[in-house]
Image 1: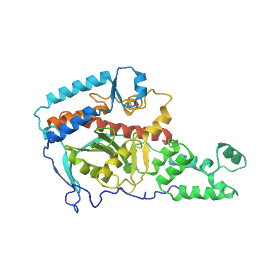
Image 2: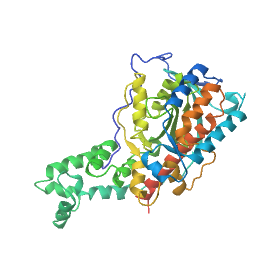
Image 3: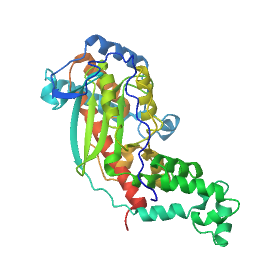
Length: 394
């Protein structure tokens, strides 16, 4: 059957024999009501010292487009001052307020310990896809065959070779065409994606179209918040899943740094289904390598290769000549009509989290959690917008 759904091989290696800090190795996870836990001041002080000496962004004056051209990790001065003021307000507002009075969630226990879980739901409309149009475009693309470029394709079409099966009669391209058709008819979505991506750009519409070979429930929308750009803990994992027609956002928050390993395990559990397909925004350059680095830190193996749709790549192809900025927050405003309130720059998340660690005041966590949740929601909405725009039913 053409483009049959085939199990994507490979899973994430969850634990190594020497995985440190694991609790009850033979036990699956269970959920209990949470109890407030405050981080030790010593750990918070250590991270505060590190972040003060290794701040990974620069503050530039508003409108300084030249300043932003030298670094992708900048914060405009007005946003910086507003965020600093917001931090002071949050610390005062939530002074002496218990953690469990602010956040309604659960503790999740797994082999690697415990972490705190929050769950929310977002309504969304899934696009109806015209997969027949996608299949037709693929079958008419003779350039998928090794040795055939645009000029050769035009020449072959003039001689009556209109679709890929026609090339099975061609003495030169027959064997190469057989391999392409074998992949298209019996390969997994990741193999088909790689086939198209090798002959075209990774942002080609047909690469995005392979997402239609998955059910909506297969998509895993991932966004992480970290304490920096390199080799620092991930403090919040945001995972979106389609459940009963809604986008369910699962967030795994570290109340203390030593909960990272359990949160990693909880996050990877979402990617171990029958046919997971990962969706990120700049995840090929940041989220996935960062996740791999933290897994390696704990000796938990490396992620297996699964289909990965980086929405930033498709957004660049679609809007690079139309919009001045292709950041997720800019795209959600220009394309989705979403305007955030009381948001903080992602670059300043470490400072907010450090304040929580150092003081035990949970106020600074509020905008971090909201920022991450909106990132996941906007990621899903933008992904479906692009998918519907490219292969939606007309």
